[in-house]
Length: 182
Image 1 (cartoon, one colour):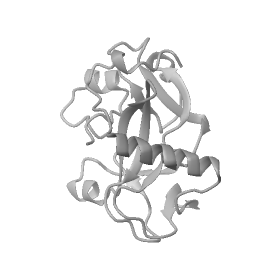
Image 2 (spheres, one colour):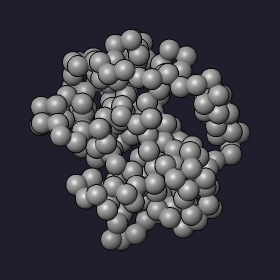
Image 3 (cartoon, rainbow, N blue to C red):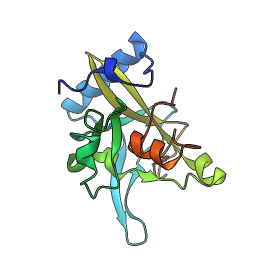
């Protein structure tokens, strides 16, 4: 917990506005009260687990906070998870932090990834992520990137921010850099 220090981040994490922090705090309060976004985890034989919208949601609807066990990038190399997310990039695998939802997580780990080598596939992504700090800690929020209709599968680019990077840069960022979202 004390390693999650925004001042150690190698990339700039733009602060969120007071209004957006307030919205995120209201979201967290609603979740504690049992009020969740209108989404459902589903399973299909050909696609595995994914998340479906149960109702239409406007652009910028919060889907959730990416949660899981927080480990160092070095420790994450021993994980079999395909759902790792960078929390903090210090430039050092011993102090950079990764969210690993393998043992502990939430609905966010079931969002489907897109083929980010295809422009058409990238255009289909309907969820984005944003890393931000609140109360001295970094968080990762997932939200709709456009209006999402009821019945749509929620998808996002797990590798966003890594285009044009070489293998060593990808490895340093843990493959799941979300720093480039607005």
